[in-house]
Image 1 (cartoon, rainbow, N blue to C red):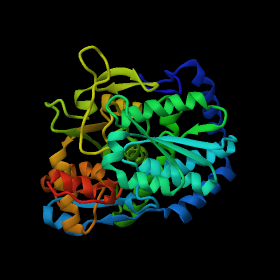
Image 2 (image 1 turned 135 degrees about the horizontal axis):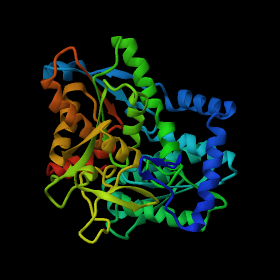
Image 3 (image 1 turned 90 degrees about the vertical axis):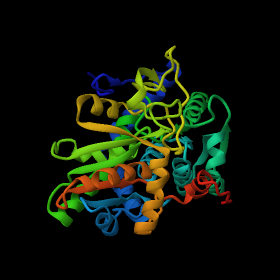
Image 4 (image 1 turned 45 degrees about the vertical axis):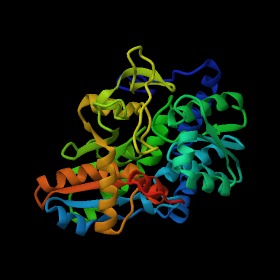
Length: 394
């Protein structure tokens, strides 16, 4: 199988007009990924602009309260812009500069990727345009304001379900119209090659740091690494450097909405089938006719009807497992961490926390769980309040 595939998953299923752009991007990435000057510039930004390495925090109160395994939180929420998204965005933005591009475009769901892209564009003096489902602009209005403040134009996408899936489609269309001067900063480990590989590599700094930090703190590797999964970038970042450590269990938590037995779910690996969409072969939620089905969960960032091809491969190969987490489980975990540790997590990250809350009491005190806290929850407070029946304004 070629470099474009993970087992049977991946590929470059795009219109001919985009093939040359993808080949140009692939060649540039594999040229610069080992370039000393490029990596030095990226390392400097990650350290001095993003605030890396992010801490690996021992959640003492949570661990004692649950009464089982020790729980560590990888604090990607403390990065500049508030999530893991900036790791990938800075890498792609620097690469786009090297390629002579003047303009960045991106899709966004929860808004964190859009904010990170707008931030990088402002830093590097590039034009920026963001595509966001209209439904998501409503539930993440704070992030829309942040993107505008940073100088980006935000387009509310009204087609389809007006969520992340449709934002990706519109961004791809825009890229076909402006290939020469524009780079599409795809936000997750999905889409056509080389995006899944390139974005994984930029996000793999998460697991690199986790491994170094846990060995320093505990003298051994964790028993379980848990992360939320939509497209899957924070999860693959948290998993990557543990893939060869078979004693470490890797668990991805998908947004199940009202439950996998309801029509309102985004748990792709629980209900999806193999198909081709957005330039890749992977698992997708589909209707009886094989069309992409509408999905729903409380998290705009997990509200995607597919999953990155490497995650599809890891699931089918048995190296990682993927579990559905319902809206109510995520909301309860969101509220729990705020009260027990004084940390307000992104609702996406709360899906991973919910699973850790389930399994920690079943494990002994000498076991270790690492949860990738992929983002902070400022953006989610108003929507969680509304979920609980309280109307507040950002």
